[in-house]
Image 1 (cartoon, rainbow, N blue to C red):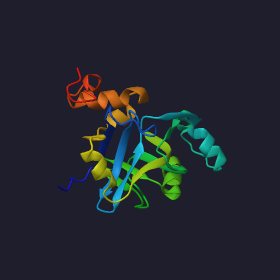
Image 2: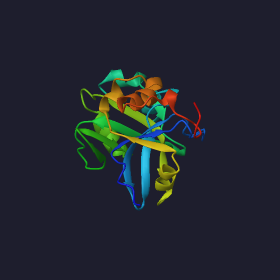
Image 3: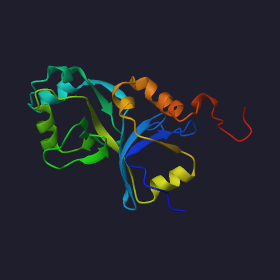
Image 4: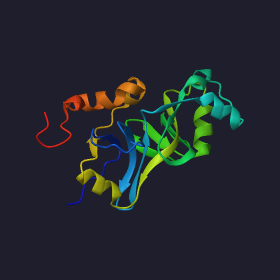
Length: 186
């Protein structure tokens, strides 16, 4: 049975998923089709701040509020590749439309345009991404490793990183603390 597309949306690691790259992660999915899947882990902040990336890339922004934003560990693939989740339009058309005015891009050109705005707005920046080969994510879903969840921009911007996984489950009426790891377990 073919799975419906999971993007845009959240993908929640189930309590049974013990891969250290994905334990209790919330992945913002922005691509899923027969060629594979792509997303960004949005609940693993690093100790690094966005200001470090801006300085290293010799970029500046009139909106100083973004310098202290934490950089997310976006996933185990290409861990130095930058990804931006942002609100608003994409002046260059080089981003994934996530709906409701939310976009995702790996384009440095779009990143520059967004941070040059007088008020950047709410953004999330990650290094690395989560990627799946054709059919791989579908197999992992069938094995019970992932739970799809509707995309909710408030989870990205208004909920603390350490609460996102649990709150996403609760938003669907599921308490992950009550998840049975093996059949018959109480």
